[in-house]
Length: 333
Image (cartoon, rainbow, N blue to C red; front, side, top):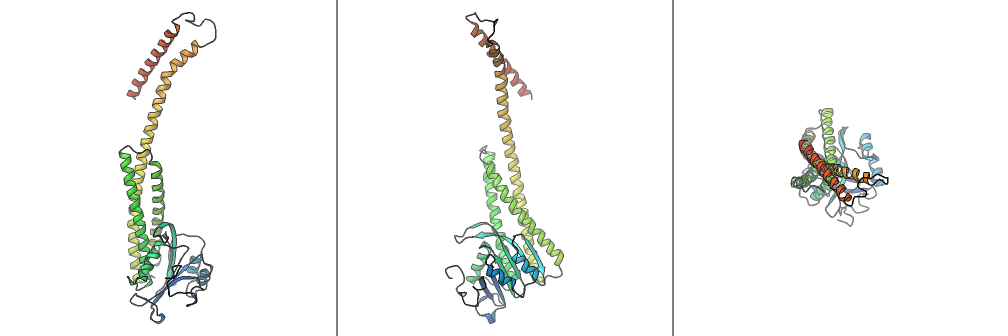
């Protein structure tokens, strides 16, 4: 490998690869093994960094690609899609971003198109699933007899990553649930919001992809080669299973959020009840102190040396009576 992560065989000036904006090229024999000999290659995988203007020009000038496929590759936006055009299966699939400290951060998109003898891939940044498959090819630990097998491996790695992400979110929900049950829930509201936001995002991606696979099956069922149809069926089954798992975790998150909101509502009601009782208890004392605090003539007990104690006793007695009545009413309701 050279200093920027390209396979050593693709140095500048060889096959014009750098000049064409390619990130890497792999050639495979009919047995699915990587080969460096062009005459022994049964099919080729070419991967582009789509943010490189040279890569965009190379894709735009590729004579084998149909115009619709080129348009999908060069579109500015990123949205999930999969379709068939003139024997080329092409699409745009989500994948976790990859950095070279072995951590996946955020979500990117992998664009691809393949025929029987060529696979073209494009991405804006390193992607975790593509990097894992590339390492298998570099180590020659796995054979890919066709572009369809390699695409299935990439998408399978992406699904594995989403499965791990869902499992992590489920573990977080377990912790939140334990704390809610143990009444240590006061700091869990934001955690639940973050978990639900991630779940909604992943589930939306899965639902979109599942619909795309169903549309492809309905629209091009008779145009797909048997091996492609089998690959799509396997991937569709995995997408459906993952979508179902996401729905179950979402349902748990909603139930926990409802339970947390019920506890917050009960706590708020308790505080409001206490404030109401205090207001009712202090109301008679406030009225009495206001009446006797008037700066006018004829105030009762003004000249009586025990007037203060009489008024205080009356205030406390009225407060006690109100407290007793409010408590009885609270028990009845």
